[in-house]
Length: 157
Image (cartoon, rainbow, N blue to C red):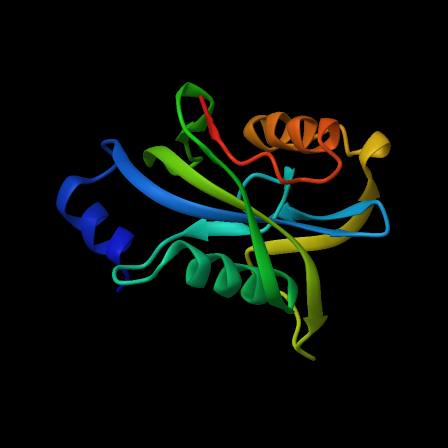
């Protein structure tokens, strides 16, 4: 049982404040997105930190689990929090998320495939993103696209 499952056993669906990491994989002017199994929406790879894990370790683990890609170098893009990162999952679980978002253009395939949290993966040009993007992902990708270098480190509410 992981940390979140343990906490859910104690508090049920009441709100949790969680730390998360995400990765924006970029290559040749395109971003790799995943369609999530739980919501059906598109987003970039990411997930919650496990106890004792650094944000960078978490980001690399999530990228590998969800895409089969090994990140060699990550660059901090920003830290995002606030109301857009308040979620109620279909099962009723409520969370407030602080998301540490990285960009990555230095990666290689592991030979593995994505896990069952992901329905499909796709590369998209920034001017042709899917309509059904998760709202917080849309906001971050718009900020990233406006800074093509993807190096605008900062706090974003």
